[in-house]
Image 1: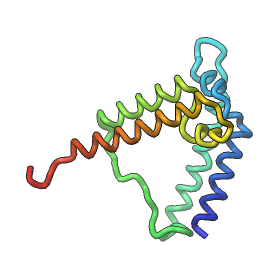
Image 2 (image 1 turned 180 degrees about the horizontal axis):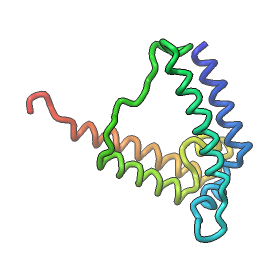
Image 3 (image 1 turned 180 degrees about the vertical axis):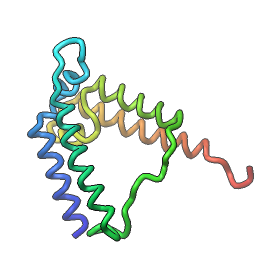
Length: 143
């Protein structure tokens, strides 16, 4: 049942991205082009997502546990530090250049767009490099 709920949520997410035309890199690039032909639609999609998630978060406070999970997985990190800022900047620059953030990129992957697929490979490489770097920088028990 948990996998079915995840599939339904993913389909709704993908459908929402398609309806809002967020699968088109021009929409993202247009949102970032504040000095030219600025397109505010990405901002409106973000506001809509924030409204939905704010309501869901408030409702979750009254629940002992999720409907299809053992416990809620809320972020535990409270501090804004250099790695967070650097990661956010690299992430934002990357999707700003490519015109896709990971959600729409994964949703549009079946379309077979070569630049998109190369961008997805770059995302995966970035994730793997981050994991490798964290592993290499992790203090050992002997230290």
